[in-house]
Image 1 (cartoon, one colour):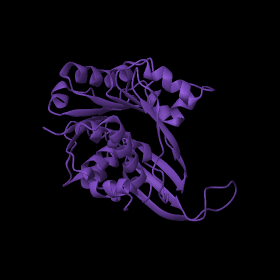
Image 2: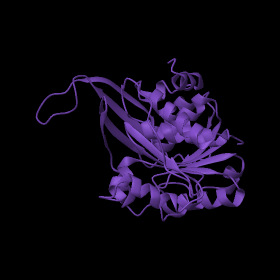
Image 3: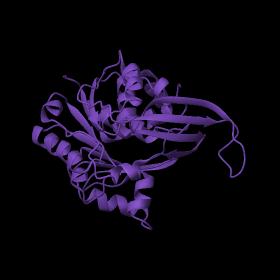
Image 4: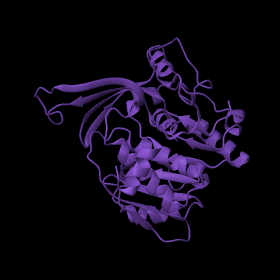
Length: 300
């Protein structure tokens, strides 16, 4: 089971619908241009992108049901993604979401509030031996104590980990090599506070790299004791923004694996994300390393 990267988090079956003539409008018909059922979720998408970049991955997370399992097994067959830690159940169809997309606009739908409020643990407990076999980890924060367990194992084993959307006062943030915080997260967790103030708060609570992404606006990043840096995202023709943040996380994880500097890592992750939003569907056309390098060099 030895691999470059350990991933723990959300792995879904995503039904994505690309609309033909703009986004949904009340009481009006909308034509579906393309529809796919492919791997999704923060960890599922990251696994797809990292494999495309040439990294080997072992992943664990939520249980996989009967409708999602055949698609995932078929999709990852022949790719450098090991799903053997995951639990495959016969109890239900599995965790799925439904995403309507038109250019820069997308709306995800699902049953996650029901799932998380059910009182059932529909995800695995991470195992230390799986993490120990890898060089770098990426941990989604959504699975409570189990996400914390993965982070604690990483710290115990001196394995750096990347996380996403973790608050300044959380264990995950304080121990992370990189925490990627989305504009959606800051608006929900720190309402009314400018992102520059949120960044300063987060920067002071960790020795790791804090990155706040702001969609098409410049990214904020830096470390404790240093200044706040800014970087503009790459300009591309946007086909779909689905998976942009998950691809950015994958780029950061790849950057940690390869010992990139902070500037190199943020630029590389931004280029990964830029390449990802220029095509649809992302799982069938994930960014390859040469594409990312050409985008950074201005030749894509």
